[in-house]
Image 1 (cartoon, helix red, strand yellow):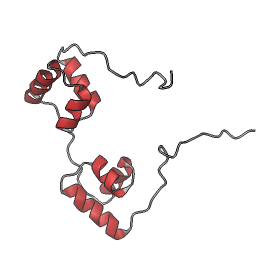
Image 2 (cartoon, one colour):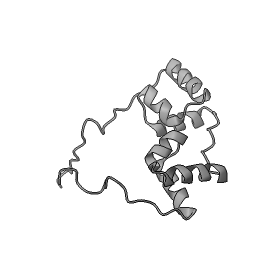
Image 3 (cartoon, rainbow, N blue to C red):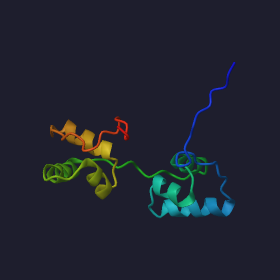
Image 4 (cartoon, helix red, strand yellow):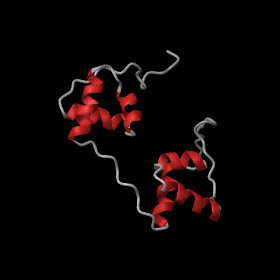
Length: 124
């Protein structure tokens, strides 16, 4: 049986890395200071899921997920209707662009078509 080889570009592959005890303690301190798991992962060169797994393993309570309440939804709607994109709003309010889009759609806002279609090959 022939082995299947998967081509992975250098930008996609992240080698596994073991944190030292000092790095683990520093990672926990950075997370406790208010950084998100994604921000901590970037700082330490590890995957976001590795950060959350280590935090849970060491009994560190995870930050609550951001919620979009009525006041925030009104702000998002106001900015979106004046031309801001879901990506821009996500960055501004520390939310995922998809979460912004879903909240806007649920509230009845008609979303604009995206400027870039990620499903179409870039070289076409």
